[in-house]
Image (cartoon, rainbow, N blue to C red; front, side, top):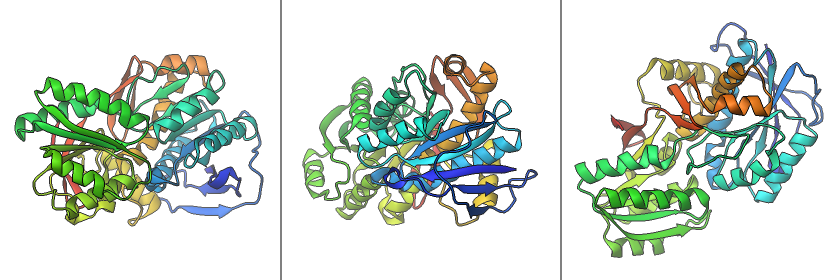
Length: 393
């Protein structure tokens, strides 16, 4: 079966579409990519379901681009082998969600108007989501897949990621009870997800009996962390709660360890996964904890099958699977389930069906209840370049 994958990425300029040829019988088939000349506008027939996947390939979150692309391509290949969504073969286009937000908005406008996409999906920072939901409102459905700050209720926007209440609240209580953490220092990137997440975790820290001894927000792309480390050292926290994004988290955690703080101060990080851990390196992850709805080391039939299919499709040396990139696979499985329940891909019926349903992905059974995703959340501690699961929280 043929799955069309075209990349409309850097600078919003169209490039030749890539065609993904897949065996109809097994995910173990070889992956072959061929380039075919053509414009960004596709055929426009109703037999195709055109999905525009907005993935960040540049900037601090760009580290998740490769695994995000791989995850969504795997999901599309599997779905098309089953006959598509509501009988329509999925045609996937990828767009860069990095760079200035007004440029991303223009890409989305062009994708809807000229590429005739039927659904926008993606994993990108929440600042992009807030802009794109104005573009999609009343026009096409929008599935937002990664961990986020919660509270998304815009009609037609379906957010399926983990929230601070699900992840950070139980983790904060565990660190307080088990590690006797009382003093917390918060540091995050300067945009909406860290802002709103910090508002929530301050409440959770207070209810656990702790106190916040410092807080700061860092511009995206900042890699000089000496001033931040000096303030952290002076505040003497038990835990540094980190909501820095992508490569910013990598450079901060490296500097944190190089400053000698890792041996004496706990770290709890949001949006931390195997991709970021690989960038930090094995010698800088001491006393580093995180919580997530997905880790590669989770032992389950669903995850084993996903991992096997991923390696078969992309090879043993493909980018490591982490929660942010993997969420794109979940997004496709969620869309398939919502469309089947709605018996429609129209924005109204699809949005209504998506508010309360159960779908199955690599994370196992995920329940969407009143628009909020409920899934097992795991607390883990970094161990070199991998994670050790501590418990389900």
